[in-house]
Image (cartoon, rainbow, N blue to C red; front, side):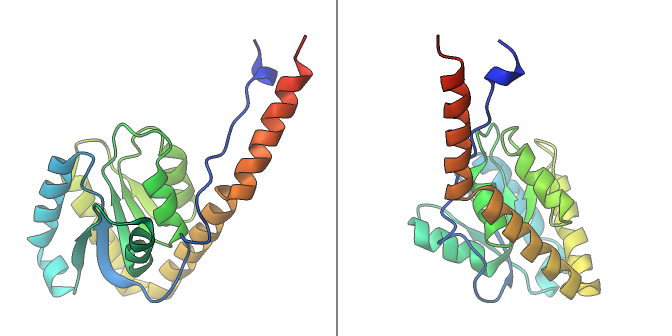
Length: 189
């Protein structure tokens, strides 16, 4: 078995639902169902930051919502905190990136490529697993950046959204499956 026998299958997201829409608020969204203790601690740490309170920031836990409401919450949020670890593909990261959120958090191993995409577009930061203070510091850096270069940040988030929506579209997934099947059929006895 060599590299010619291995194919990468792209996981597609629903790009008609997860996309940029409307105005971003100074809202930090997160999903507490994975590593809920970490999420609760980071939320409490953020709520106690002076820059957070005086800067007009809010937190939104996304939990138990139907998919359209998840998309709406991400579309309105400027930041998405990822607490998934371990993670398979990192679907919440992909959906948040497609909605134009600044990504901060755990890669969960499977989400590493999504945080790398965010970093290439200056639209996210990875935080080491268990580093609660790292979340707070990354959010504060973003707060400062927002005050210094809001337009530049907006351009980065739009570029990241386009890249995520193209790279993880249904078409990209179908194309990767077709290529994998073609390679597999070439090696049939």
